[in-house]
Length: 263
Image 1 (cartoon, one colour):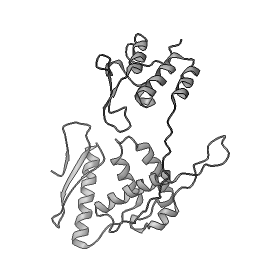
Image 2 (cartoon, one colour; image 1 turned 135 degrees about the horizontal axis):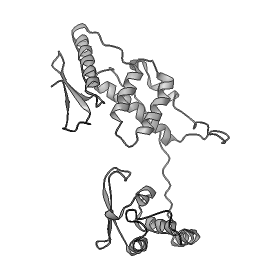
Image 3 (tube, helix red, strand yellow; image 1 turned 90 degrees about the vertical axis):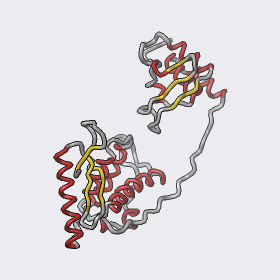
Image 4 (spheres, helix red, strand yellow; image 1 turned 45 degrees about the horizontal axis):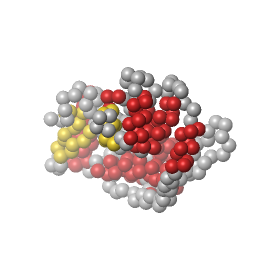
């Protein structure tokens, strides 16, 4: 089975299954849903593996080829846009280079230090160590995939920066009450009270549907496509949260929090 899908879904990604001349079995995603492209990828890789084993001819693997593979594999991930932004940045520095020629010092030296200029904003903000580490993570992912696939013989050791500890600040009851009193729109007051009562994120609250709410059991269910972790989870509802939900009943047949409500 040279190429195959892991399930019967017609939109599923094609995978390859190759046995090298040396007896090693190679299974990996092609990153494409197109059968013709998957077959071409399979044939090209099989030929490269044969030449490497029989002739000792290891083809040069460029940064651009590695970048395409990373983006294909990340296509369905929630942070795809972030990875794509990182890849665009690294491509400006290493595009056209063979991957084996990259060294850890030059990768570190090429890290971005400031945000890109924004219209109407004077000066560029310095990037945090945490943001720089995200760029390094994307590069590490690219290099690790290439190393795992036998495209490069060594991995540059990329040491991440020590990040500043996150400061956690809790809002007091008095501050919460003052915030709620200052909100003139009912839907916004309700959303803030619900957030303070449950700890739910803004996107989770504003996308909440009545089908996810069970007032009798005092629980709301967040679906996997709306949570930051990508996993569904229940939210226990206290009396304040239940009171807010009851006050929202009748505003909209589907959505719990509707922005055009007033009062």
